[in-house]
Image (cartoon, rainbow, N blue to C red; front, side, top):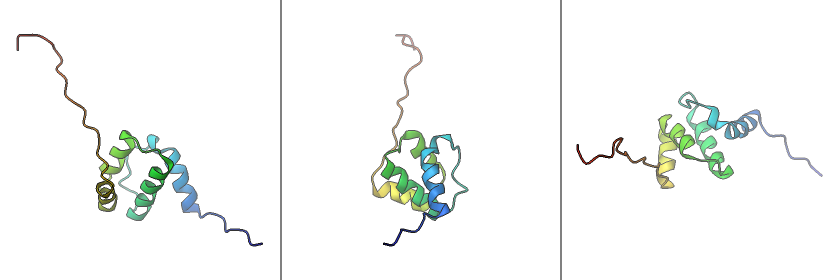
Length: 89
């Protein structure tokens, strides 16, 4: 019986990054193909939230932004609330 090959170092790194994405502040330095794989694995793991979505969008990589649009993932828009509730404006 043949044993499966061990996972690559890149694969292990991406798996670890998925678990710790909320600690990252910038992903713009990550190569496109790695960022796309990271995004896919984040979705598969069910760990995509608003903060992480904004992190991927702010990276500015065309491949990831295209994938977000293909999946029709929309960032939440925070409404602007008045700071003072008074009848006099």
